[in-house]
Length: 145
Image 1 (cartoon, rainbow, N blue to C red):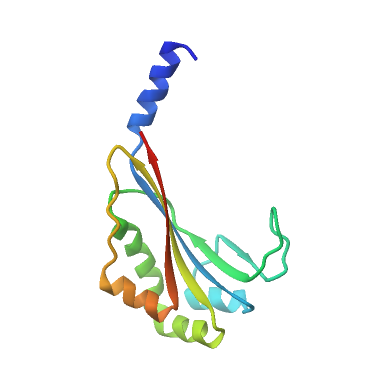
Image 2: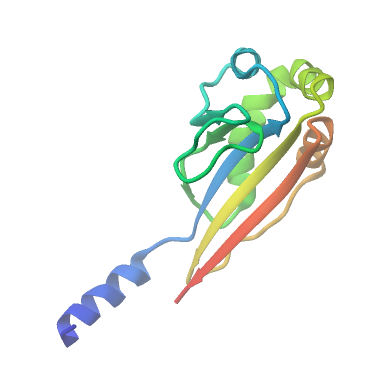
Protein backbone atom coordinates (compact mmCIF):
# COMPACT_ATOMS: atom_id res chain seq x y z
CA UNK A 1 0.00 0.00 0.00
CA UNK A 2 1.42 3.40 -0.95
CA UNK A 3 1.63 6.30 1.50
CA UNK A 4 -1.18 8.05 -0.36
CA UNK A 5 -3.46 4.97 -0.19
CA UNK A 6 -2.67 4.59 3.50
CA UNK A 7 -3.59 8.21 4.18
CA UNK A 8 -6.86 7.85 2.26
CA UNK A 9 -7.68 4.75 4.33
CA UNK A 10 -6.91 6.62 7.57
CA UNK A 11 -9.04 9.58 6.46
CA UNK A 12 -11.99 7.27 5.72
CA UNK A 13 -11.63 5.55 9.09
CA UNK A 14 -11.57 8.81 11.03
CA UNK A 15 -14.71 9.95 9.24
CA UNK A 16 -16.64 6.91 10.45
CA UNK A 17 -19.18 7.68 13.16
CA UNK A 18 -19.93 5.57 16.19
CA UNK A 19 -23.00 3.52 15.32
CA UNK A 20 -25.29 1.04 17.01
CA UNK A 21 -27.24 -1.80 15.42
CA UNK A 22 -30.14 -3.26 17.38
CA UNK A 23 -31.77 -6.63 16.78
CA UNK A 24 -34.89 -7.84 18.61
CA UNK A 25 -35.19 -11.62 18.80
CA UNK A 26 -37.94 -13.90 20.09
CA UNK A 27 -36.92 -17.55 20.39
CA UNK A 28 -37.93 -20.85 21.93
CA UNK A 29 -38.75 -24.47 21.30
CA UNK A 30 -41.74 -24.06 18.95
CA UNK A 31 -44.30 -21.35 18.21
CA UNK A 32 -46.31 -19.98 15.28
CA UNK A 33 -44.10 -17.35 13.63
CA UNK A 34 -47.01 -15.95 11.61
CA UNK A 35 -49.11 -15.46 14.74
CA UNK A 36 -46.22 -13.61 16.41
CA UNK A 37 -45.81 -11.44 13.30
CA UNK A 38 -49.51 -10.53 13.44
CA UNK A 39 -49.20 -9.56 17.10
CA UNK A 40 -46.12 -7.38 16.61
CA UNK A 41 -47.32 -5.98 13.29
CA UNK A 42 -43.83 -6.00 11.77
CA UNK A 43 -42.42 -8.45 9.23
CA UNK A 44 -39.31 -10.15 10.61
CA UNK A 45 -35.99 -9.65 8.86
CA UNK A 46 -35.15 -13.30 9.61
CA UNK A 47 -37.04 -16.29 10.96
CA UNK A 48 -36.82 -20.07 11.19
CA UNK A 49 -38.52 -23.04 12.77
CA UNK A 50 -36.57 -25.54 14.83
CA UNK A 51 -34.93 -27.99 12.42
CA UNK A 52 -34.90 -25.59 9.45
CA UNK A 53 -31.73 -25.47 7.37
CA UNK A 54 -29.96 -22.13 7.84
CA UNK A 55 -27.02 -20.90 5.80
CA UNK A 56 -24.37 -22.79 7.80
CA UNK A 57 -26.30 -24.95 10.26
CA UNK A 58 -29.63 -26.43 11.30
CA UNK A 59 -31.72 -24.14 13.52
CA UNK A 60 -31.74 -25.49 17.08
CA UNK A 61 -34.77 -23.41 18.01
CA UNK A 62 -37.64 -21.48 16.47
CA UNK A 63 -36.87 -17.78 16.20
CA UNK A 64 -38.32 -14.49 14.98
CA UNK A 65 -35.81 -11.67 14.42
CA UNK A 66 -36.10 -8.01 13.50
CA UNK A 67 -33.00 -5.94 12.69
CA UNK A 68 -33.44 -2.20 13.05
CA UNK A 69 -31.47 0.09 10.74
CA UNK A 70 -28.08 1.07 12.21
CA UNK A 71 -28.08 4.50 13.84
CA UNK A 72 -25.13 6.89 14.06
CA UNK A 73 -25.35 7.79 17.72
CA UNK A 74 -23.52 7.79 21.01
CA UNK A 75 -26.62 6.78 22.97
CA UNK A 76 -28.19 3.34 23.19
CA UNK A 77 -31.45 5.09 24.09
CA UNK A 78 -31.77 6.29 20.48
CA UNK A 79 -32.09 2.65 19.31
CA UNK A 80 -34.32 1.71 22.21
CA UNK A 81 -36.83 4.42 21.30
CA UNK A 82 -37.62 2.59 18.04
CA UNK A 83 -37.89 -0.73 19.87
CA UNK A 84 -40.23 0.80 22.45
CA UNK A 85 -42.45 2.27 19.71
CA UNK A 86 -42.70 -1.19 18.13
CA UNK A 87 -43.61 -3.23 21.23
CA UNK A 88 -45.36 -0.84 23.62
CA UNK A 89 -48.72 -0.78 21.76
CA UNK A 90 -48.83 -4.61 21.78
CA UNK A 91 -46.98 -5.28 25.04
CA UNK A 92 -49.83 -7.01 26.88
CA UNK A 93 -50.67 -9.38 24.01
CA UNK A 94 -46.99 -9.99 23.17
CA UNK A 95 -46.16 -10.74 26.81
CA UNK A 96 -49.05 -13.21 27.05
CA UNK A 97 -47.90 -14.97 23.84
CA UNK A 98 -44.32 -15.22 25.14
CA UNK A 99 -45.44 -16.62 28.50
CA UNK A 100 -47.90 -19.08 26.93
CA UNK A 101 -45.16 -20.53 24.69
CA UNK A 102 -42.33 -20.25 27.28
CA UNK A 103 -40.26 -18.04 24.97
CA UNK A 104 -37.30 -15.77 25.58
CA UNK A 105 -36.57 -12.42 23.97
CA UNK A 106 -33.27 -10.71 23.43
CA UNK A 107 -32.13 -7.21 22.60
CA UNK A 108 -28.84 -7.68 20.74
CA UNK A 109 -26.69 -4.60 20.30
CA UNK A 110 -23.71 -4.34 17.98
CA UNK A 111 -21.83 -1.19 18.96
CA UNK A 112 -19.11 0.05 16.61
CA UNK A 113 -17.01 2.63 18.44
CA UNK A 114 -15.06 5.17 16.38
CA UNK A 115 -13.10 7.89 18.17
CA UNK A 116 -15.85 8.49 20.79
CA UNK A 117 -17.38 5.63 22.78
CA UNK A 118 -21.13 5.15 23.08
CA UNK A 119 -22.97 5.35 26.39
CA UNK A 120 -24.63 2.10 27.42
CA UNK A 121 -27.49 3.09 29.71
CA UNK A 122 -30.80 1.26 30.17
CA UNK A 123 -33.66 3.16 31.76
CA UNK A 124 -36.13 1.41 34.05
CA UNK A 125 -38.96 1.68 31.48
CA UNK A 126 -36.97 -0.45 29.02
CA UNK A 127 -35.93 -2.89 31.73
CA UNK A 128 -39.58 -3.23 32.75
CA UNK A 129 -40.58 -3.98 29.15
CA UNK A 130 -37.81 -6.58 28.90
CA UNK A 131 -38.95 -8.15 32.16
CA UNK A 132 -42.51 -8.46 30.79
CA UNK A 133 -41.11 -10.06 27.63
CA UNK A 134 -38.82 -12.51 29.49
CA UNK A 135 -35.95 -10.62 27.92
CA UNK A 136 -32.19 -10.40 28.10
CA UNK A 137 -29.56 -8.02 26.73
CA UNK A 138 -26.55 -8.99 24.62
CA UNK A 139 -23.96 -6.33 23.73
CA UNK A 140 -21.13 -6.87 21.25
CA UNK A 141 -18.67 -3.97 21.14
CA UNK A 142 -16.03 -3.24 18.51
CA UNK A 143 -13.45 -0.50 18.97
CA UNK A 144 -11.73 1.10 15.98
CA UNK A 145 -8.88 3.58 16.04
